[in-house]
Length: 269
Image (cartoon, rainbow, N blue to C red):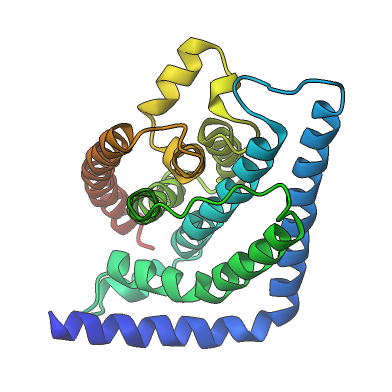
């Protein structure tokens, strides 16, 4: 166990230091995130300025808080695994890991954590600064039980996003054209996570279905819990749904990875 931890720490440090070479890229991405967040806030402010005091149970302050908290949670769980996994497969770099003592899946998870650590930390910092500019409209929730539930949900959402990202990347075992599919899946994920608007604004059928999908737990559910629009009991049920999805996705990844490796090795890569 200690050996695995030491290996993980080394991989994380190496990825973190490598990421320092791309400081300009980090800054530009953060700037884009701030602009996107401000556009969402301005859009909802304009919608409410038409005289609508409450939209589907949301006041303007609640909607702004929803956007701010939801984006904060979304940034904490994101990853860029699909692009890196698919690239390693297509370019043949996966072959190096097949003869190394550390499994590729273990390496790529640790590497992704280290690679995204700085960008995620900076994103959370910039998002927090934006929140400070909207303190007069921001709703505070200091309930420890709710906050602990949200943190647990975010951690499980992080694991789910890693598994989904890795699965998307393995598409490269069967086709080199993966970028368009990755973009499409990302948009579907954002829609069903509540990233564009609260899922409660959707038709009842879609809103209900989204509860049983894994995406809502990276944005909609944490934000709703923060606003106390979801009870602690429902939040615990949500954690159960997340655990089930982790088990399902782990099983699917195991099967897909085994089949993909057979095809990869058979092709002589």
